[in-house]
Structures are given as C-alpha cells and as structure tokens.
Length: 197
Image 1 (cartoon, rainbow, N blue to C red):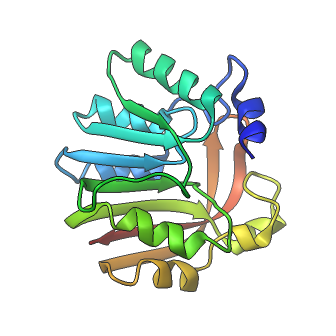
Image 2: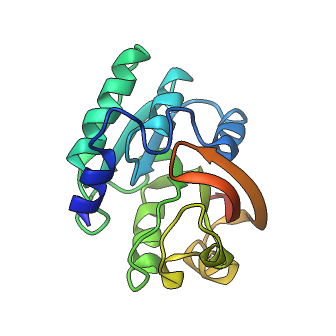
Image 3: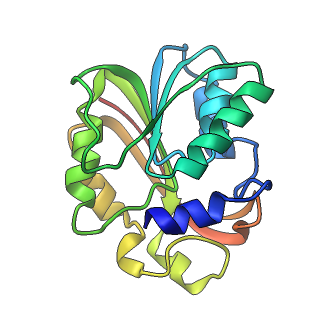
C-alpha cells in the first residue's frame, strides 16, 4: 500500500490540492488552537492549514513522498509541522495527548477499522474534538474518488460504534460536490462526523 501512495504523491502536483478540506476547515474555525493530530495525512494540506491557524500539529502517514510534499507545503507557508512516517498499526502516542483528532478521507483496512479508530480516539484528551469526513458506502456508485472496495467505505452504524464513547456525536451522510485536486472531483457520497471525547 505504501508503494501506491508513494507513486500517487511522486509528482509536482498535489494529488488532492493544497487547500484544506472544506468541512474540516469550517469545524476548525470553531475551536481554540491546541495540539492536533492528523492520521493518514498524505501531502499535508489539512495539517498545514491548522499550523497557519496557530495549532501545534502532529501528522503521520506511511508515505515518504507524502511527507516530502507536506514539508514543502509547510515551508512555503512559513509554518512547521511534526510529520512522522508511520501507520495505524504501529503508531503510538501517550493517551490523552491531543485536543483535536482529524480524519479526512482516512480509509483503512475494514477488519482493523474499529480497532484503529478506538486507538486513535484514545489519544484525545477528555473534551477533545473529533472531526471526520470520509466516503459513504454509496460512493462505490461514483467515480469521483475513494477506495473501490465497498468494505473500506463508511456507514453511519460503523462510525457510531467506533466512536461510541464520544458525547455530542453528530453523523451526517450526504451528497456533496468535491473539488480537491485531481482525485476528488465531482458528485460524492460522504459521511461527516463531529464529536467530543
């Protein structure tokens, strides 16, 4: 899988653009800056945006090419981010470290999804905020981005179960028009989640 992402990110163009995801951007504006974690962050567009807003940013991804692009983007925006080369299985932080957890199109092995989501959620402080946007199961009918394996796409029930210990959990499934680089373009079925640990 690392080879797939290294190949996708190995060009001058940013596969998903350099602007932050719109839903995440809107949610972040409601929060006071603190420590924020970006799993599966790819080329860094969302992490760099948070750093520009004064957040202390940690990101990780298994792609070396993604890290290179993210660090270039951070430098061009005069901010710094901590970017680790790691995966969901092996990443490890002390519990209750972060004020915000951001998962933007961070699709993963469906057999491990629940385990990984609970692991990542454990890194949030009490009162910490979850911001998630991913592709819904219906996205399998579209050719506008996301995994081609329906089991890797999200359902409301799965996400409600994964983040069952959150309060104020809001899960909305909807259609939207994505305009994020070359690989997220057009009518898309997404799920948007916010919650408080």
